[in-house]
Image 1 (cartoon, rainbow, N blue to C red):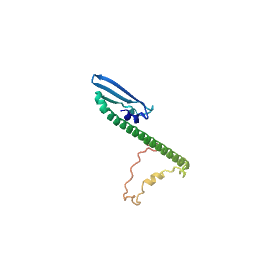
Image 2: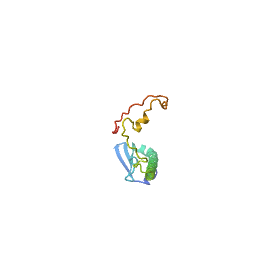
Image 3: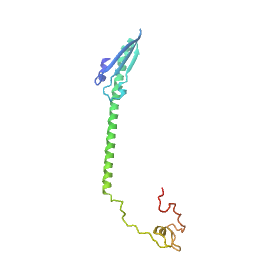
Image 4: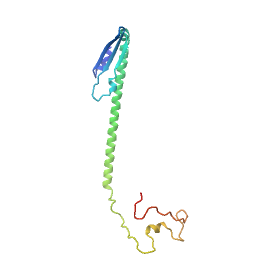
Length: 166
């Protein structure tokens, strides 16, 4: 029984309790103690075995060997998963940092868009003339058909003049 416990004892303390249930039955608990404060609680799951002294002598060693093997596999799997998650988090952090730096550089290289490139023309004050936007959207009578061969007038704008439409 203690030979099977040696791999588990390499990294932690193991508590063993034995209690007599009745005149023919014993209750054995094998509880691995927590090795680190941030360790997964699954690694402290106890092995409990109830049986006669003869059954315990014959079978506890086999059950204990299987328990230790599963415990070591779980510890290894948890360590691998933690390392993978930490590596992925680090890579995501580095990628976000790189993209932020690229956006910062692009913003520094972009021209200032608050100054218009072409000065706006003053609005016409003469009566009977359309402003440039209206003239461009309304074809003159007798002119060539529109882009798709129709002379249908365009729908009226739903945006009030001088205001913002949301």
